[in-house]
Image (cartoon, rainbow, N blue to C red; front, side, top):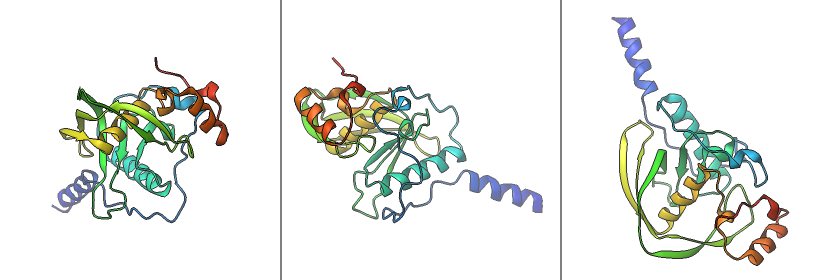
Amino acid sequence: MANNFSQLARKSKANSPIEKVPKEQKRPPSLEIYKLGDDVLRENAKRISKVDNSIRILAKEMLQSMYAAKGIGLAAPQIGIKKELLVIDVNFENASADPLILINPEITNYGTTLNSYEEGCLSIPGVYLNVIRPSTIKLRFRDEMGRPRKMKADGLLARCIQHEMDHLKGVLFVDRVTSKEDLNKELMKEGFHQKDVMPIN
């Protein structure tokens, strides 16, 4: 009987959701966040075939690093891991608001309204430029327990999801900037190079 209880306890622990990650992180990011010019940012991510405890641990570490870097989103390719995993928290100032963990996300519908809004990226720190994107989306994904989910998003959340999903295809927000003059000025200011940008026509 003890063995059975032990097995149940281990199984319960392995299948438990991610514990709350403090949004105030006093240490620097524990995971290295790759920067514009690093080849790993241009590689395609792969779907996650099994959502297990290793994925939940990775998501937790990504959240810790995202909060430590004062970001609102982080994709696994930004830390050199080619998996379709995103963590997002546009309510980072609200300690009680839960972050989003998106596994194998797919956008199923884009709204017809486009808007332009300033974006930044933890992989291109200090660079902020306007990008045009659909203002609303519908998507499906799996949560940290592997359960299929659907949701609608608009405003900043919709933009953040699209931005982070671009990382899964090796696309950075600077690739979508239409003003080349503004782009070059911002990149030079922070020591980045326009040759590392791959414009999307």
